[in-house]
Length: 212
Length: 202
Image (cartoon, rainbow over the protein chains, first blue to last red):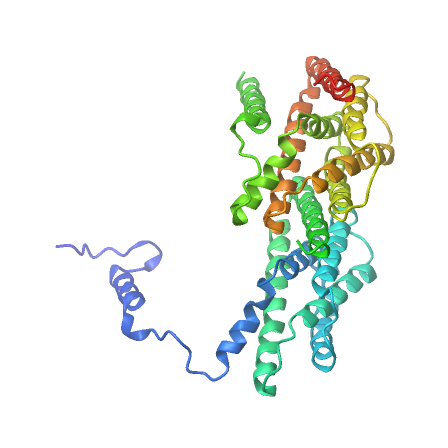
């Protein structure tokens, strides 16, 4: 009576949809906490780049810069970032965390976003230096408190992956937009966005320096 | 006919946006509670002072008058340098004659629009950047203590950008001969408002 025998669009039958819905809402299949040891620390590290505005602004600024250079001229700076993060993490483990790392990150974000706004096609060496410095600072800022070596390594691995994923999404998203929408207004809009990121970063750096 | 109607609708929308942005009566100033309060505080800061509003409209207007690339380069330069000025204000670095500089920006930019001055791009950027320091410093000095920094910064920068956009929208009237006169008259009004602030009439 209710089943007409006709298939839904794209070959999806009503039965398959019902099954998927049943599986989705079945509470017995879900487990709130992963039984894998150390997964909590990994997740904490994974989300760490999104935990402070200075890291978010720095990653956004770098994402816009690399997105505007997408794709061939973004690879080398990206590698600089990938190399900088573990170096910073290592420095954070062997020595004390330098004071004012948050202000330094905000100033780097301002510099990188200014470069993206005013000279997005600038030299690869400059973009590489910016990416490496931001990676280093994010690595330093990701240093966890004292604890067992294994837990520290797991958390740092999460932070490393999280920072790279954030940059990947920002760069890839902007690159995809530029390849999809070829209207020149998009590139202008992205440069305006970069100018806004730079302005916000400068404001936040000044506020951080005054302790507000 | 349809094209003309579309243009009229666009102009009406830009005018409506301008009116909505610059009407201070509906804005709540300095509500400092949390992220939303910080955003509202930052957003309303540039649009509550007429001296700031006319100067930022003038930047967009002059950019539209000069055409690309000034059309988008001036609204990029202004927030960048303004943030630097705001940082100086927050850090307590004194700059003399701030109010004179703010009023002067409206006078000069208004005159440049009135005279249809087509200066080289770098000169235009230098002029706009120099005035942005004064505006930024004033905003930085008046920054409310309790505002959430990130939300305040986002609101502050977005409001500035929208004011430029309103100016650019008005400036697009220069595509029509009658529009050129309208825009130049707008420049005269901006300059007069600047003079009124300069001589403490307003």
